[in-house]
Length: 366
Image 1 (tube, rainbow, N blue to C red):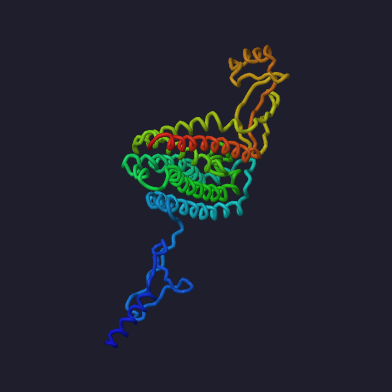
Image 2 (image 1 turned 180 degrees about the vertical axis):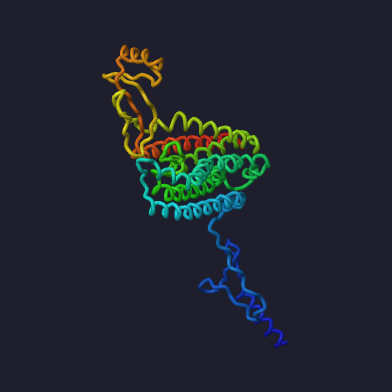
């Protein structure tokens, strides 16, 4: 019948004009001119939803999805700490504007500042000094070890993604976020500490915690310890054991850094004055490292040389030719250079450790 044939033709035409194909991202593309999706004549079906837009795609998104809780906590703690430092700076600046920022001869301003802000700065620097170890223990060590322990890493071998791309994404995103967080923390605390550096922690920028909490050292130490935690996790393949090993290694590294490395990053200055003269007048902000007895030609003896009773001590010094005392110190202008040198050493070690991780990942199955 003619009516039926006409309807059939209309239906076929609509069907052909409504043909669509997948674009590979979950959306549909029409076959009409210009690539527009055709609109149904009846209006019965809703148009396909647009593909979701993400900041991260592929492997980086998968790494974020797997570790989003730890990474989100790190970002939130960083923002909270930065906000706290900004708030604390208001009180510090009010004090400095009213009282001054340089210690007076009697030390009264220094003691007043300690009474008001010493606990605050001590808490801040203690937290920042623990950040590298905390990141290494609770994030670095489980990063690959958890995948090995639960067997999820074996899925890599069954996917089209190569092991090299997987390990690069697994390391790259977390370490990038660690760099971002520690840069923000270091910058915010430097902003708080710099105006009061001669008063905060009694002006001790080396041993008071400011050296590790400002500048590039915090970032470099975090990267080094975290990369070591990752390496321990990959080798041990058990999360708890890797965390314990990382904690022990972090404690040993902190001890070696403090006792053996840090002081040697700068050049010691000598201040010589007569043995019976007035005390040394070192530059403001300097940190005394050692104290010596010396002869006129510069030969040094330990400070405990000739410490017997007075008459015997005088004879001992006369016999050895001791006529001077020598103070060895580091001055504040060296701080930035020392920090960058130390950070460079730590970053070089980080590259070696990460290189070992990549080599080990390619050398044998994880």
